[in-house]
Amino acid sequence: MSELGLRNRVLPIGSFGRKSSGWYGVWTLVLTEATLFAYLLFSYFYLASQANGDWPIGGPPSLKLAAPNTLVLLLSSAALIWAERSGARQGKRWQLLSGLALSLVLGVVFVLVQLREWQTKSFSIHSGTYGSSYFIVTGFHLAHVIVGLMLLLALFIWALNGMFDRQRHAPLTIGAIYWHFVDVVWLIVFTALYLVPRLK
Image 1 (cartoon, rainbow, N blue to C red):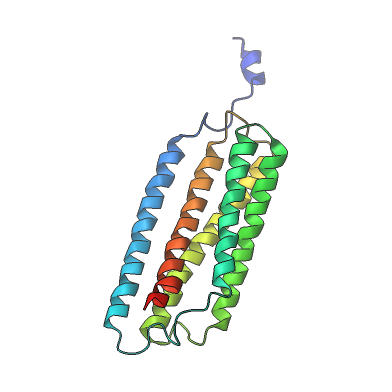
Image 2 (cartoon, rainbow, N blue to C red; image 1 turned 135 degrees about the vertical axis):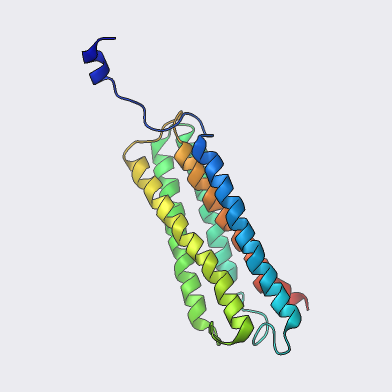
C-alpha cells in the first residue's frame, strides 16, 4: 500500500466483539469488589449477633423508599440490556442512546432517593454499631453507583459520537457488567438490611 493510502486510512477504534482485554479486567474488578461487600455484610451480621440493644435501631428499616428504589435500579439494568442488545448489537443507534439515557436517569433517581432515605433516618453513622454498619454498607454501595453513573455518562457520550456499532461495542458490554454487578449487590444489601430483620 502506498504511503498516501496509509495516511488516508482510518484506524478502527476499539476491539471487535465483546471479550476484549477490558472484559477480563472488569470481571477481576467485580470479584474484588464482591469480596469487599462480602466482608462488609459479614461484619454487619457478626455485629448483629453480638448486639445487646435494638438491632436494627427502632425496628426493621422502612420499605417506603427502599422498595421502590430497588425497582428503579432494576429498571435501569433492564434499560441498559435493551441498549446493548437491541441497540448496539443490532446497529440501532436510537435504541442505544435511549437505553443509555434511561439507565443514566434511573441511576440518578436511585442516588437521590437513597440520599433522601438517609435524611429520614432517626440515627446517624455515629449512633452505635448499627448506625455505623448501616451507613457504611449503604454508603459503599452508593459510591459504586456513582462510579457506575460516570461510566454510563462516558458510554452515552461515546455512543452520541458514533463510536459503537455491531462489531465494536466492547466498552458498552464492559460498562454493563459493572452496572449489573452494582444492581446485584443492592439486591443482596436490600435483603440483608431490609428484609432479614423482618424474619425475626
